[in-house]
Image (tube, rainbow, N blue to C red; front, side, top):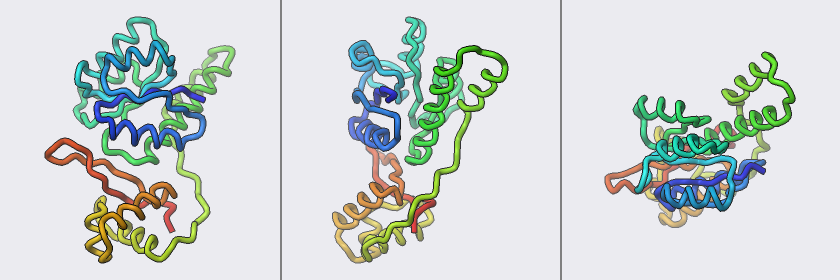
Length: 227
């Protein structure tokens, strides 16, 4: 299992990342922290192998944290997870040793594919005895790899759940529980409950959007394997 520490200033978002991580074979979330200082303490104490690292932390920029870990000789890897979209931040993350960069909001599929590519890369790296050119090429190709999701058996859904799924599919943009409740004439908690169930079945993908308060809002898109 690849021991992974989630570092995000928003405790709710950190929890979502941790729950998604738990769905990917070969990964174990060893903790969730919300500041750079807490990340340093957790790294020393828990010895994670991978960070899911936010850039905007309350006490230090995440890339600065990554650079200081690199300067100290740490072998920990990181996948940067942030809402920052400017190319300077992307370049800084790459030059600081990040193995990948995911821009919020992103789907579970996007996270899963990158984690799986990283897992294969680590396995190849650890199992290779010599770094000849073929091995180096293979390692770089694996690091960039992203595969199509495997087809899943199509589940039979309850009628109301199917209607909720159909409403998500029909929407031209990510849609939330309140909108679905209005469309179907059900309560918002009912719509939210069915959306949560569809997410657990991996038929819809939770998308995080950020309103004027800066807090994440739940909305959903349909996954390709949905019936």
